[in-house]
Image (cartoon, rainbow, N blue to C red; front, side, top):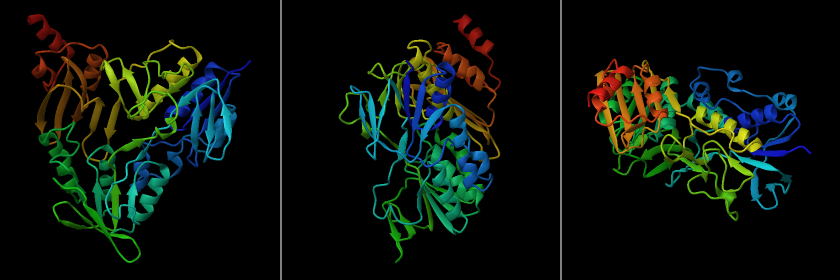
Length: 413
């Protein structure tokens, strides 16, 4: 009797799981349920579409024939509202029940809403889906001035979109540096200057107290907690994700900010797995629970989850994620968990070259590279092998760092 697999979510985690399941189980019944209205697309490239740099066609990864060719049932525009772990069913918003032998939750998150007056006004955008990108592109092409809120990786995308569309912008940040939990002010200033060159002005120790609107409820002004006013007929907000854990209510599936999984992507239920943004997985490298929404990480989690749905314990998730930014004249890459750790080391080599490593218990757990990305392979190797670099921080940030340098320093101690 063939196994029945249900996957909730058709992002890269869910889609890679479906592909792996079909390879591993040629006769299985596989169903993907998604609340989006289109199949898998490249979430990394939607910013290039919104910037006007790419047409729609290259963004799409799968059309519906991809699922037909693999005998995967795809249910679009279908929101799962209930899970019954004991009955092995999930229920959709229209009352349809789907039976499963094994279930994968790849349900991701929803952009966090800014809890201020008029934050739902016309002209205020969040940036998460392909449809969001379409709406942003349509609006920004006719805008005169913009405000972006959210000093993180999605916020910088919104700022770059306004710059690429040649719209004057203000980028409001709560602290004194972009992505201040991963970059020092010195490192972040490289990003700040690149934004200024593109007519987007960083505004520090700021934020939004409320928005003003016109008689048609269209946004006109952002007012920050200091009382400063910024004209804006386009507003982009990226202040984080609310992970879609509400459907877990009434179940005993363990979760906090995300769903708890082990290193095999299994939850506390033998037949329920999770992958992607939604997981708080056991990170073998960090030695602790972690969440990571990077594309590569989500894809690998989907693959690993599928293998363990077929044969539990067959392969563990051990991954050093990467996230690159390509908006500027210099490269930018973060890897691992750059916002974590109990120690760090950094160095600046030029106006566009800087490096920072996050360290926990004497081991590298993440980092940020600006300008020169060539050391990334060495740092990732040290992470994967959990090499103790205690007492050798300055060696790690030598501009031409080689692994042999570290080994030599260790031998001398």
